[in-house]
Image (cartoon, rainbow, N blue to C red; front, side, top):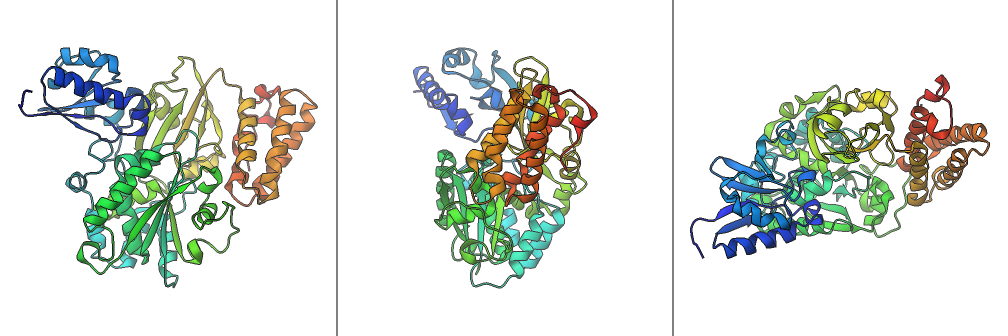
Length: 525
């Protein structure tokens, strides 16, 4: 074996890369390097989020990291023959990774380290700015930490967009002998994967954010509620928590201070409804995942009846950079009341699917064509569902509306968790509307009648409309039913299912066998 200095390669351990054969690629590279007596050092990083290029392999060169992808086992021999360990030209060569336009044109704040570092290396995490926010928070009062988060303008990235700092302030001023921080990592929306990518690619950011939340609210224990469909994220988090605890970043005396905070991972069983915060709390307590009536708010009476902060993965993982760089730094990104950045996730019929972290204010068209490259099929795009299975289907006439929470409310849509699912001209929107209702019927917890019964009846009614059974009467009935679900459901599952249904009906009436008239373009109230 040639014992010259090892050349470092970065190959993702992320679920998306593993799903397309990353482990086989690693084995093939190691075997070929050994056969050629070449010394390679393989680092398993997170995914860069350029999912159409997975498995993406980066080679460390004097000029920086260069990218090759998508690499398959069958490409390995030709890559070595092209002298790829020294950045040699090859059909899969993309140049310097940081200069790839898809990546270069982003504003990576929350995802600054994802794909760059070894996810489980505390040394690399700190070398790239990690734990600076927590170190600063250890010297601040709880109220000052909360004020910093309030001033940053950070809002919940799980979909509801409630101001994070206000939620924390409520927990802080509520007296209790025990308080909790709960991370909602039950990422169940179709086309979303930012939570998973963050947990697998930069778990210490989430741990640090939760510890800061604990200091801010005087909570001493936390739970990360992860869906069981994310086994790699779960194992990565558990390893990272153990490392952080051993290094003194978690435990009874954080970094020698008199502040205490510790946490653990809990697995969910895959129920979509457990992404709703009160249903999640019921599950954490070992009960069936049923939605709780509010009030009381979880911030006042949450987990085990104690004041509880419940935030999404991205919300909590964004807190460290706010503390480290200051509220003003983060607030300078975005528009209106939508401050900072959001990791948008491009999925569906899209040529370049992946994760794009951008400041609020860009348009859907920017994402679909500037980053996504249009449809994967080559056909014209027709509709995009934004915000998960409860999000509206948007026609091309609305693709230039800035991605901003309030602007999207104005067109009866929601930004939500930032998930985008694209459809080309072959889509049948009446079928998508029926699917939305059926999804609600399947995933309903059953506690309230509008959701439990309404979604079942709604599925039946849409099916009758599609088969021209008293179509006009059933359209009227469907709209009336949607009004009931909007106004009467206990939580957002039933209350927002009308969004995809009515948007499909309003914007694409021809798919339901209806004429395109002024009455068919009314929006959701």
